[in-house]
Amino acid sequence: MLDKVFQNINRINPIVHCITNFVTVNDCANIILACGGSPTMAYDFREVADITSKTNALVLNMGTVSDNDAMITAGRRSNELNHPVIIDPVGVGGSRFRVDTFRQLADSMQFSVIRGNISEIKAIATGKSDIRGVDATEADKITENNVYEIAAMAKQLSIKMKSVIVISGPIDIVANKEIAYLVRNGHPIMAKITGSGCMSTAMLGAFCGGNPDDILEASLASTVTMGVCGELAYEKTAAARGGTMTFRLHLIDQVSLVTPEIICEMMRIEKI
Image (cartoon, rainbow, N blue to C red; front, side):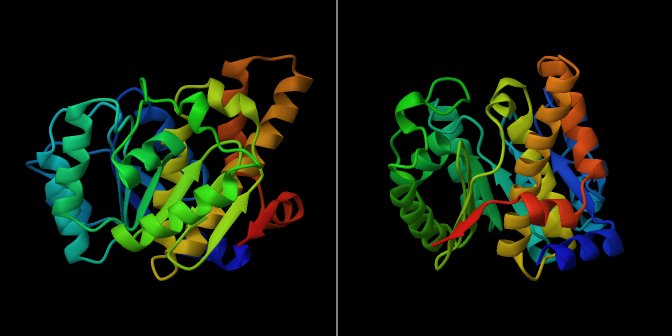
């Protein structure tokens, strides 16, 4: 599975159009380059339809959203061209504005993948959340005790939204309406750097842009790759006695260096 996904990325060199969080835009561009894609970060509504027409995938990130017009214009054009559209509903449920923004986007286009933390996905699935800021709440944390229940919720949301659902956490979940994968890769330090979630979403753009005919497998491969690279980056960081900024550097490095063989050796996946 991984070999084919990576071969397609290397063959296509997918161009990923990102309308993303200005806090992490540089990290998103670099992670796309590191995994074999090519980023473009155009966000003015006057050009996004033209820009996205020449790309392979669209990534929308609500982290610092202030104007929906560009996202809606690019999303509709991507749908017309059958390009994968990946949405990161950052902080949805944290304010009425973000709830309304997500609903407007969802009513305007079809998402291929919805990726968020458990609090964000729960807010979309149930309409209820006590999220503060952009982080998942402690009460919502994915654990071995609730992961199967959350995976079932993800499957139901996939049916409702007609999208692959990716939930990040101590255990990552990748699901469509029929299958859920539990991914037990990664390291807790990944939650300590700004942009790890945004980078994961940007990577999904490259993986799905290179594999538009199998969004579930592409999403799984991207999620596993990020988790494995997090583990490898932590090993390098610990050896260097570094902290969070050292880890951030090693994370992007590992994405550029990792091979399908290493990922297959290290991945810990359960299919349910």
